[in-house]
Image (cartoon, rainbow, N blue to C red):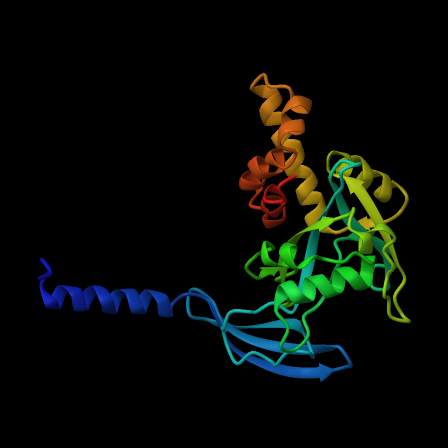
Length: 270
């Protein structure tokens, strides 16, 4: 098919597009300043939208190579949104409480951990979930797991990214009746199981007891609250609606807040 545009016009448009892309902010160089066992302090050189060269400071994990420029960050780790399913109990979320030295207190988080070399994110998720909570993921659950794109956690300080892996766990399976954690000597992790619709109350209770809650869990809580408000405003009964689809409220509000965690909960087939 012949283009209706003159070749010179197409060339000019292409040149203009490339020129505009070249002017976008970009990181041009990473330089290691100091390294320790797990972390590396780096000095970054970047170019702003006006073409001015500027400096930044960032922390990088030593388990990954220093970037050479503006390449997209891959995931260092996984965070696991695990939903327990049982014939005797309502669907529950798996959370963990542990002491985090940089915070100086205990935190409430999703089970999480680094991806080992050669490991797929879903494999890392199953391994970390078993180590931290004792629960075993079935092969069928691994095949239907939802894995997010890499998401950043603190982009002003580090290039660390994680993939959120949503897993459905059969809590009635023999291997999950009495789950046994497989913790390392330095780990001290307490497992919390929370019915989905009790999540807001549980997070408030943990915060009142002095723990700091992982930001994504509060985003999930806010998404559920926004979903509740939306349906109350429309005259629908929240409790009746939740009993049909407990994750739908989180999904509706997750679209509003752009939360990948909330979206993943919507896929949990509760």
